[in-house]
Image (tube, rainbow, N blue to C red; front, top):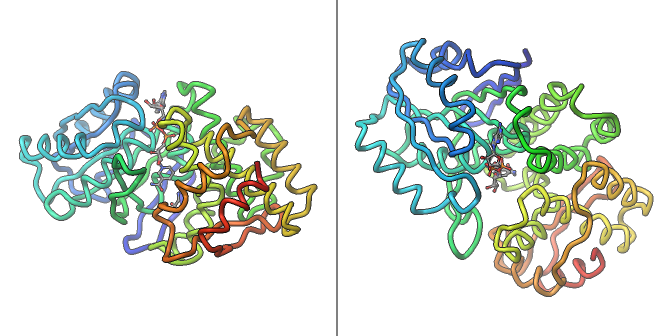
Length: 349
Ligand code: NAD
Ligand code: GLY
């Protein structure tokens, strides 16, 4: 069992252990008095892990209600948000009760936003079941839903009281979805952890618990310094300006993880072309991404990507903060005028 303590506006543990779902009740009862639990999950995870979570929570004295959404990004919607709030109201969930997110980043982001806003904020516990959610979305308190105009446009910073990662749940993920999470793992290596990047050249599964802990520690260190994303936390957006545009161009057919992989290749190649990143580091990044069966080429033009990036929520006034790798393990915030983004993407395509 590995525990990482996050010290943000709320202090909480991220606990990583095989089979931990079966101890969710006992561990949750240590941070929140057994109460009425509103569990949000999706239709895939529901069939796989709902009974174990419900059994564990009930065993520890929680009363449970389960709300199931369809799997997929389209479910992180205003409609499901309102439906879930109404569901909680209909079940008489009160201020002393708690939302449990059982699933990937879609479930976690939606459940977190509902927990942040229902009755102006109730308890929230994350039980991530994808690699991406374990290493990234369940930690740090970003919660959101999508609008037609773009992803994550409505949200709140709302930290959970506990995060329980059960690496055994990764065994039921498709290789495709597993590799989506690998993109975010590689991201931490490129940002500021050369040793992690090098470890990833060995098979990931035999070291998965250590890798999850390593990534959570990296994210924790950043969130502890800059919870509200005004500075150093923006490093976590490496590859994401292009990635969000790619996801949107594809009508969300291209997953977040694959889009991040393409975005990291684009920005590393552009950084090499601008003379900021050694060419061999760019090549190494591209090779590692390929080894994880992630895409390294992007089907959209620089002008389409730049058009979407121009209305990205990361824009401030006339400029946008890109994250540039100056080498593996050494990325920095690089503010550029919005009008220059297209030419930078062009260099990376
Ligand atoms: P997801 O939640 O859509 O899950 C991917 C698929 O895996 C779904 O079909 C789901 O049903 C299935 N699944 C989940 N767990 C499973 C399991 N154990 N076995 C079998 N199938 C399983 O996607 P994701 O990649 O986990 O998360 C992507 C979302 O996370 C995006 O909406 C993205 O914007 C968000 N995100 C948020 C943050 C943050 O800081 N809040 C960070 C990164 C990404
Ligand atoms: N995934 C980006 C962040 O948490 O800031």
